[in-house]
Amino acid sequence: MTASRIQTTSSTIGGRDPQPQKDRRLDGVDVAAILDGHFAKTDAPPSELADAFHVVHVPIHRNEHIAAAALRADRQRVRQTGRWLVRHSTDRCAATVGLALLATDRAEDDIPLIQTIGLLSNRFGALAAEALQRRRGGGEALLWLAKRVAGWGRVYIVEALCRHGGYASRSWLLRHACDGDFLNGYFAGQVATTAHLHEAITSRRSTMTWSTTPADS
Image (cartoon, rainbow, N blue to C red; front, top):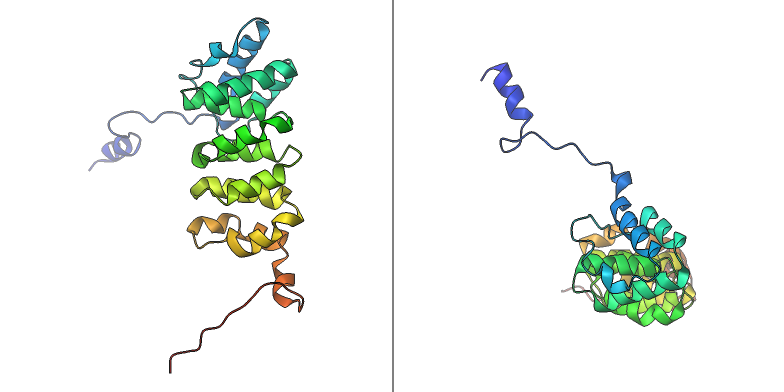
């Protein structure tokens, strides 16, 4: 094979020129622009956004551009829009934007709604965790979710629980956070630090119960 053929082969994928890699710092800019346009119209209902995000990339984690758009708008409208999108969207992109809007707020009344959508944790877990940790009572809500989700969603929730769960979650973190799934490796160190694992192992006053199984003779 000639050098030119090797160069052509290495620079193409499936017969097409490789696409330039997108600047990840621009993620969320398109969503923010749609939100800015919507909130600029004072009489625009939330339902106007139901199908507005099909053609743009919607981040599933906290995004500075989307958060900034929410902070530029009227707080009450942002809250109402976020609630409507989470409750009524038939499109997951619009529901994700709604949850992102609620993640910029602190209203405790939204905790049950955030918990419910957070159960679909692979898609909504990261933003649900962000939204709950901003609210009074969010630690208990995070613990409730942590007991019910799996996969990547569980990673997001447990990480948030380590940051904001408080003393009440220590016992659960010690006993149940690391359940043998390979994804535990993403948060095992945080769990050990937050739950004071060393103290639990070495203290005579530890409430942990250890059992041993006699070896087969």
